[in-house]
Image (cartoon, rainbow, N blue to C red; front, side, top):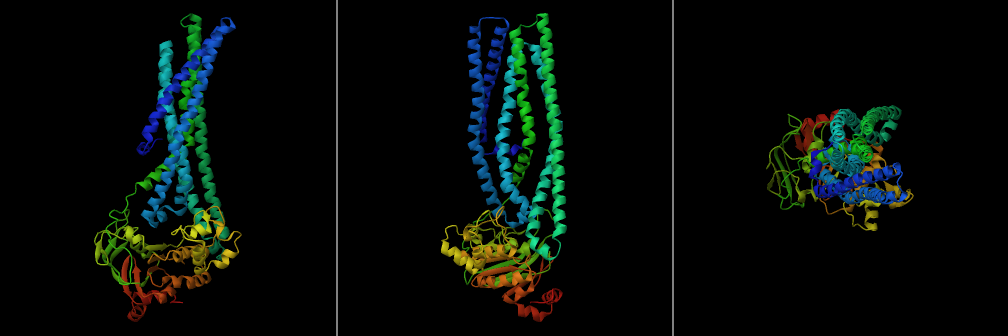
Length: 575
């Protein structure tokens, strides 16, 4: 139930101590409340004057109000910490994902990452808000009550002490079953998110191929699986709640029966007996609340684990080694026998890559699917680190990797599927340059061919797009990514990872006319499997199963009749 990393959150222990002190005072109020309520009832039972219940009733009311006000104060005290922690966690997660690069998103799935960063953090906030206070309640309140009951009658206290771990054991058994079901439910939720996002992105293509109905059925089946997993989790949660209520109620009934026998035998007076009976429900209340919140916060616990797992992923170190990261006309980058292997793989994905690029050169990276094009783009972008340091040189300086702050600050990355934030179109375009003026944003949109589309929008540049807002086609999303690049002309390195892979030929042809002017006066690495782009490249790297099998200018490669010529023949040539 508790992730040990939870206690490493900055400031948690200090707030937990404050909650513990407040909880201790609250437990004292519970005892006082029960004692003086019982005193008032006993006085009435003994037919004493009405004035004898005024003081006990007043003390009961004060302690009752104090008890609940302390509960409110605990929430008010802890909420700012939870809000600050969850907000920082969301910011740290986004920063971490940015520094780790697109490979992490590709591995986990876009839907899963978006769910983690948005709904996941909200669930973490609920989890933190509930679990700490409930833990403190269960750790303090029952024992204060038990100690007081022991002073009144030791055998009742002994029975309550013995039954408590039995109930906890039963709760643990059902809790483990609920945890297993919740894990399956959370995995199903992530699968549903990824499936839904992928289906939405490919919907135009699916409609053109006549496969949209088939994938609609696929979405239905994935949703139905998630519904069944949710219902299975709820069945266990309801069963465990019923069982816990049954056992605690039965335990209170047993205490009441034995207190009744003791009263009849004269072994205990009415006041302590009634006080014990009044305190018994409060003795079990904290564990019942904890059990109910256990099921309510399982998704929060899973979300917290996922977030912390990402935050603890090792980053590329030594990011300040590059002394001059800005690309110039006379700059050059060299790969010398570079090999890269993913952590979960035994064989290298890229093997012994060597090439040398000078100045503002347009470099095409081609090859069949799975040849290593995207991995090479991620390596050049600094999102991945080669197996051996010192194999990459920029302007003659040997580097352990290209995850250098100076290098990444001078580059723009345009992936297959640009991410659009839930915000206005203008702010999405100004992602890299938030201080851009309205005129600059409009000019960037014009350069990217967005003007005609923007005029059809109800609010123009102020139209909300992204998650949960106006839908954007694949071609429009790529144009927004291009507008970002046009707007920020201070970056001189452009990385394209198959930006038109999911577009139809007509859309790609129109988009190409807007991309080509952007390539001028930049160092460009353009990974693609559509060979008509090669006619606009100065230099070509031909990849095959992670090996750089051929390189040179397009004209040189065409004359060699090697891998490049064979690839063109297999793919139908350049268009």
